[in-house]
Length: 298
Image 1: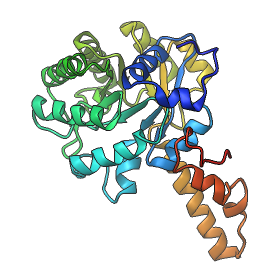
Image 2: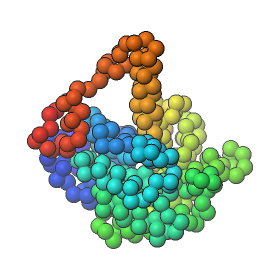
Image 3: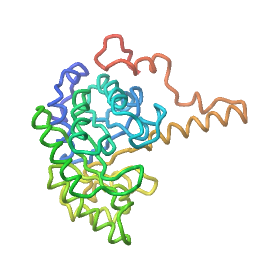
Image 4: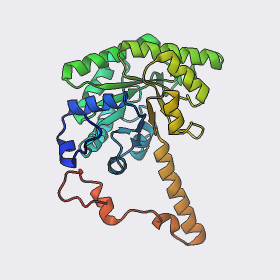
C-alpha cells in the first residue's frame, strides 16, 4: 500500500484481512520505525486509530486486567478471543494480538488459539517464550515448533500472519547479564529462522545493547516503551524496526484516574477530569467504525 496516498475510512474498512496482514508486514520494513500502540478495549483502540496510527495491537496486561484478570493465562481462551473480536470488528487498520504464550501446553493448542484469533479478525500475533506462573523459559525447541506451526497456519488460512516472537531470556535466563544477552540472541535467531517476522527481546532498553542486538540479528527488532528507553528518533538510528507501547498506555490512563480521584477527594476541584477531556459525542463515536455514517468526527 502506498503510504503517500490518502485512503478513506470506507476504503480502509473494505480492505481484506489478507491485505491488512500484508500492510502490517510492510510496516516492519519501511524507512521509518513502526510505532505500535497497544490498546486494551474498543475505545482505546479507536482513539489510537483516530490519531493516525497505521496499526494497533492489544496489550495482554491491559486487556486482561480491564476484564478482571491478572496478566498471564488465568483468563479463559474463549473470553479472551471474544474481547479481541470486539476490538477487531470496530477497527479499519490492522490489529495484532498479544496472545501471551498461546493459551496451550501443546503446539496444537497454541495453533488453535491463533486460528481463533484469525477468525476474530487479527492479522498478527505476539507470542512469549516463558510461563507466567513459574517465570521460567520454555525450551527453545518448543517455541521453534510453535512459530513454525503458526507460520504454516497462516499459509493454510490464506492470511500472511505477522509473527512477533518475544523472548524473556534477558529477564529469566540463567547466568550473568552477558549470558542472558547471549541466550536472548540465540533464541531470537532461532525464532527468526523458524519463520517469525520480528523478534522482541523483552527488557532491552539501553542504546548500546540495542545496537548490538540489531547487529547480531540483522532482522526487524521490537522494543517496548519504558521510562529509560531512548526516544523514537534514536531508536530509528539504532536500527530498531518497531517500538510498541506495551501496557504503558494503560499505566498512563490509570495514573490519570488516580490523580483525578485524589484531586476531587483532597481539594474538591476537577481539573484532571475536565482538562483535555473528550466530549460525550466523541466518546459515543468511539463505539462506531470510522466508516459508520452515524459517527460524528471528534
